[in-house]
Image (tube, rainbow, N blue to C red; front, side):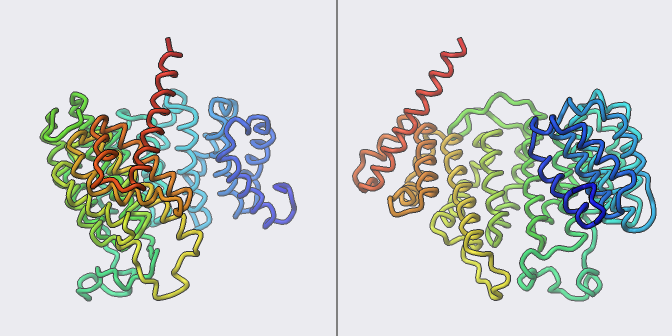
Length: 474
């Protein structure tokens, strides 16, 4: 179909191929020679609207095939670098943007040693694209920065003096023109109550991609990025109030990545569960926690997008896992309150009133989003138990009735599995402290006792498997 004389058929066939290749893995190897022959031909002489899709498919082929892509590496890199230098109309710049994206995918597939000879030239081309008046090229350049910093880590620090100011410039961009008036003309312009759901602008999209990139950039370059942390952190905190849900989500991830990276730089002793803290945390990490957690919790107070809250719960779980109880010790009450609202289905994101039926997701999508949200909240509670140890008991008193309620036979299988799995994790993390919740009648109605029993059985089975796997290692 990619050889069809009809450009529309070729376009859709190539797009389908791109989607399939992205997840094929080793299964793509048998088809790689004929795939690359056809995709390179399309890139060279295919219809204008097909060339960016063909280039993206080449990136997907590199991602799927890994080391097997080596025979095509030099030819593909040469063609991509040519596309990264193109100037002209919107179609040409679109191809350049895809090329900037794709080269980072190829670099990640090939590895730093193979790509190192091309790094300087490609980075210069990506940075030159930032100077062109094109949101697409700036977004593509930020994607490039995020991936390349992950591939080259500290080696990528030499480009920070140019890239960090570009990120700051994007995060500080004024979006008032997107609404048809000048900044300051309307004091209510930042009130997003009247914004349509999912509303984005080209600038908000650029800010989202910049926030995604800067988290990875700091994580990869660590101490070399420190001169830029203060200003960029301030802009990321402002982004938490943005009308775009995807921008808020990206800012949340980046800010938690900043906390994690400060902890990594400090190289602390492994944290130990319990409150008060049994392992001290360094001053810089503590200062970042005091900036990030209050700002995120303020956002959470009124957050009406389920995916943003789901991501926030995930980030809280991961930061407790990586940094320990120090991240949440001062904010446990506030976090518990928000998590409890989710289990009670009273969180703002669960009670939003859709004035327009067109804005309302269909029932299946709503159910899926609800399930993701509740599972993320349950995982967060389980991580609380891991971080707080015995000190989790007062928190357990709050959550047990609500989590156990999801284990009732009348509840959907997925939510029941979530509840039992959550309680199993809590039981494992609390150790003997879980016993009283199965024994104290005032805290254990019959249904709660059954849930705890299931959780403990689940934990014993899990521990048996882990023990067996450990024995196999010796």
